[in-house]
Amino acid sequence: MTKPEITREQLIEMIVAAIKNVSGISIPPEKYDDNLFGLGLDSIKAIQVVNLLEDDLDLMIDDAHLPKFTSINAIAAHFDNLK
Amino acid sequence: MNTNQISGIGLITAAGVGCEENYRNFTLRSPGICTVTRFELPSAKVKTNFAGLIKAMPDESLPPELLPLLNSDDLAQDYVKAAVYVTAEAIKDAGAAEKIKSDPRRTGLIVASSLGNFLNVSELVKDYFMKELYKITSLIHGMNSYLPSRIGSIFGVAGPCYFVSSSCTSSLNAILQADTLIKSGIVDRMIVCAVDVCLETGTFHLWNKIRVLSHRNDSPQTACRPYCKTRDGIVVSEAAGCFVIEKADTATARGHALIKGIGMANGASDFLKPSPELLEAAIREALAAAQTPSDKIDFIAGSASGSPHCDHMESEAICRIFGARAGEIPLFPYKSFLGSTFGTQALTEGALAIKTMNDNLVPEPLNIFERDERVNANAYYKASDYSSYRINNTLFVNYGFAGNHMAVVLAKCR
Image 1: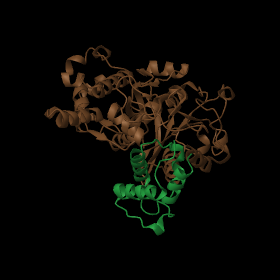
Image 2: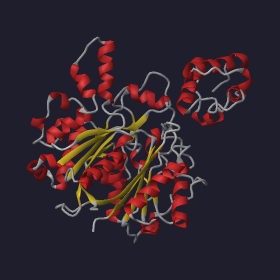
Image 3: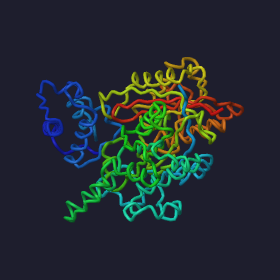
Image 4: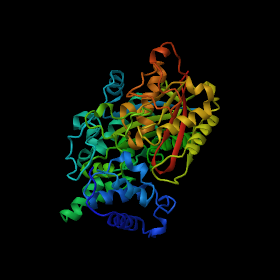
């Protein structure tokens, strides 16, 4: 998986939109470090978010990374760390 | 209260058609998990290209005396044909045909399935929305009540006939209800049939997108690795099974196993993840219902599926209940051979667990390549250490999606 060619701000915007799309939950910036399950997502919605990100970013996300996707900033950091 | 016994067994899995072929291939360690060729793989990006698919069922594979009773719609659906095959095999094994015929209202039938007639529903959607065709039979055959009604009619059953679905525990739920109906006196025997023949391009794509499947495309037969540290997901596998259950003290056939006690605990705080506490509660309830103390359990058929996130939790529950004995009782997960057979598990895995018990033949662990330090129950034993072992009581554990946790204690028939 290669690093998506978008800025971190665009990536966060995309993640927030995906969460809103699948769950109806709007997450304000001060909660970008909060646990997604604590904000109302469950495992099915979390998978839907990841699937949407795969489609939007046109890449495949390895399932082994999913446990790290605990918050919006954690997801963004994962993509930031890609080469 | 009287104990009920399993008098007849019928079985179709990816490993074979009929009990004998399945038992033989289990002994040979020859599972039917392989690269998908029966249907086109999804054109979209998917990571898994293998599964357990039942073999095509030619009409000649069905008992000839039943063929005149089947209509063209029955013969066009493997979902129906698989159910007919296993039911016929189990009734013959139990020697129950004449008893059903002599008093049809004293026999009931439950069909269990996780996904039901999904292939039919899929065709219905394609016909209606893509081809603008509509067939009322598609609607009827898509109803969950269709198959129990049809199978009941084919085999002359006139007692209670209905459908049960509770994800991977569907067939154990059906066994629980069958056991209860017989004990209540409503019927003398129950036929519990389970069928999940449900994989095609669309459903397989969805299973990929749920992100629970193993990705070991280069080695399908070793992909399902319950309790192994290198496990990376489940392997979906079609199957059908059937048990004929009747009162042990009035059955004429020698039973395969006694149903001693069943426990269940439900809670779906998360649809995909089982609860260790509820699993422990279900196992404790099964032991209590069976009036079998944990030190009388000789073998545990585990429910672990190869899920990186769940398998160790089953081991933890077993360790809490069995204490030091958890390190001694062999723990074998039949999914390592069959894959995850949806709602049929208590019949398909159950048939193999009963065979294990009756043969006193503890299977060598399968697809264990590295120990998981979180699994402290006895999943890493050597079968040679149990060469003169006797299995009188088996604990069969069964959990799945939707918060279903169940367990049953099976005992050898005396």
